[in-house]
Length: 305
Image 1: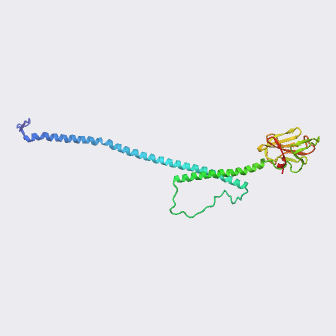
Image 2 (image 1 turned 60 degrees about the vertical axis):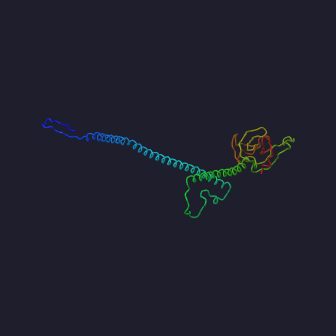
Image 3 (image 1 turned 180 degrees about the vertical axis):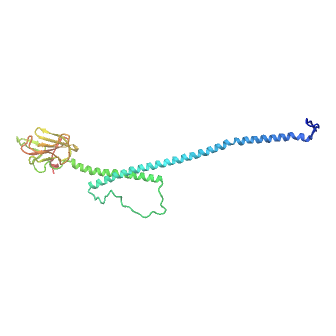
């Protein structure tokens, strides 16, 4: 096949010759070339489209790092919380130990024990061989368990020592509130408890106390600790004092020349509450001493030493 091209600048024609085979294969080559270009273009687009997936992976990587960082921080806070709890328990145990030491020192004094043998200011003597090479440190759960066991032991020992202290103190209190001894230091019993002849009319009457003759103006002592219920001048009794004690016991002191207490006063055993006199229905200086339990008169002789 021949194709003629006429050039304006040239007077002679230009000719190009194309064979039939070239004309047949040219469209095929063009089609293949275009397909290749189109495929490359599409691959380029797909390659560009893969970039967001890479960014998502990086984002997930950073998120994982953040999560692990948060887990580490949470673990650190939990460890700190455990340490704070252990420190708090140790503080409570230290306070309990101080209380036990105070109780122990008091019991040593009250029980009149050897202070060198029971010295609460020094740790108990202990000893042992060097630790073996296979010795291991306690883990946190084991340490927590040991602390819990030790804390319960301290609480048990404290309770028992408080009970012992209570027994000592109650014994001493019982001695204080139990009427014992005479209301005067010197004197003699001039009239006993029970039926007797009335010193004024000679009739047989019941005497509800004992009369203890003593020097006028001698101090009158409370024979037990208690609360003053009455301190006044009373018909027949003269200057009269009544003290309420435990277990329904009441002591009464009559015929005093002076009274040094008032109603509502708290008195201890041995306190001076008045002076010996002969006020009221009396023939001479003495103390009329009575004891009653739950409102009923009892013989004071068993309480007099």
